[in-house]
Length: 388
Image 1 (cartoon, rainbow, N blue to C red):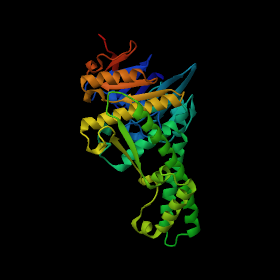
Image 2 (tube, rainbow, N blue to C red):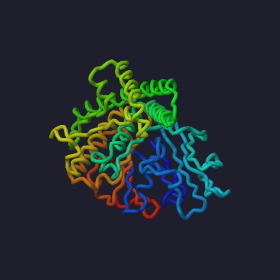
Image 3 (cartoon, rainbow, N blue to C red):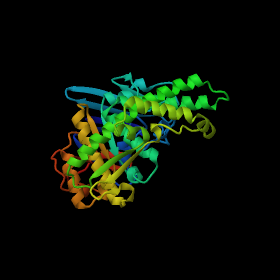
Image 4 (cartoon, rainbow, N blue to C red):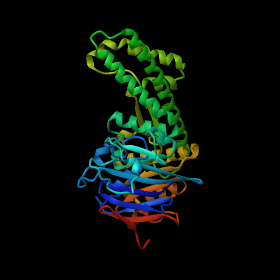
């Protein structure tokens, strides 16, 4: 778990230090106090742009000259401790504080990530810890864009199979390379053959990993009784469905390669890659009611996502010995008292660290756990919440 968290010039936190952090951290405060900013800081120790999907330049405090910012954390795993840092240096020559490692003083504006003072990649973070989150932004996930659901699924997959992230990066590079070749007035067919063959190979690995995770999640969802709706996942994608139907992997790979080859003229004209796993979708349905999740009420959709989150965390904490964190932003506010208590009971059984936000501490009434920690957040400051 993360036992210490330091934020420097990050969002509305000028210099915030949270130490002695335990298993469950509840951040309580009014809207705009800076609760989600703390969760976002933690989420930046996962691959990607964090739970808001912001760029590195967006994180710095607008009133701070130079736009630099930094986050430090102490990660505890068994008897081992790892110091993690991420941030970008300010544009001037003065570091905003000495609490951020000197290693962050880089000449570029790119975000650096360090583990014990050594630079690592975003993919390397998966070797350190696992972080998953559920935020209000996911309220529209079941009815929103296909790409959002696909990215949500892939985050679940690379949490269980870290190599999946590198496979996705190779696949995206291949898509860009194919489109570059197609835009040429006279594309070299042999180069296209080679690129499409590699794309089909990578697509097969991506689809197989997605299918494995969805299958395991469905087994977990069918077995668990968590007080929420029972979700059922369906992978909608030509490659994934072909594999699920039992077609030989080599035949599926060859079919995709042939489809890309045949679609070259139309893809070149339309400027698109019309075939591949980048067009797959994840459907989340209500298993008990036999209803598509997109047709459920807003409250039911939240319950489906919570059920899916709990199932995923059970798989993740069973399969990995790495520190695992779950970030839940303003989730309890949308539940009635019965479901809030049910959520607290389910979370108490998960062997992971929990970070939650709410506007009122009463939302956590009746939650088990004598070591639960409550902090008041107010305009970028944080202090233990008294009286609890």
